[in-house]
Image 1 (cartoon, rainbow, N blue to C red):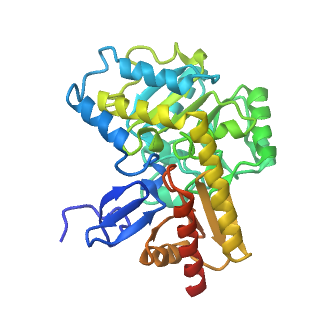
Image 2: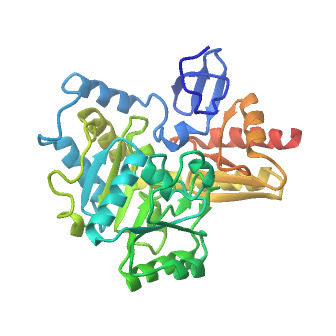
Length: 378
């Protein structure tokens, strides 16, 4: 008997302890964690530096209203915008909340309502982000969706051209669809998005909730494309496990979010800012990002070398998807778990690997060895 809503497809184990990439369940069994809380625990479990800064901040101040100045917010905003074309940040608590803020800002700035999103995208489960999400399973049972969203096929330039008009406020996308199968934007499609944005005066809104903060080997995934977004949304890895979200935007939006236009009680609280500032100081270091890129290449090479030739590898950095014809990702997930490897599905056919960015090559090799055993026994 439980007092909880059963809205999660929970696995029958409880993770109670972790250090780095290794976690333990309540029975004492150890696992390699290649979920990292679904791309959240970016610097590993119980990271000593994050534990320290959180502990130190907790002795000073947990919460203060956004009616007062915040040096922690100022510092983090500066870190997120340094050496980019973006210059303004707003802090919230989650990816869905960040995406809501991004859509609100786009509509307010342009005075237009329509936002184009893409099939198999995932942007959240609030009414706004649910309507933006291009997966029907997320919307079932909740009645009519909010209007002004047009969903078109991903990586289909002609479909995007057909959907465009001067009524479009923004084009909203993930440059790698995490929940939608770890599918990367093609060069041609990225160029089409830029072209349509210029032609119709539509903003480019990039959901970096899963792909941002070093996950793909660069600070933000859009940096690996020709896209120069007007606004990006962040969460997941930004707090290294502590709840925090953000939007980061161009200077031209500064006047649109004035006093009273948008807010959140807990957004940018001192605890979140202390942790996120430490996360960014670590991850945005050039040598750290180079290591993520190398580890991602090592993971791809190991998969291609050790797994069957018909296994398709997708993604960049340490956001990797594995697809094999004829299998169900959930079956592979369960089998891997039994052998001591935690993974997460990305749709029905793709197994997603999102370890902490601090994962070692030895841990990568061990994970691939487990996956090899799984495929031989399935």
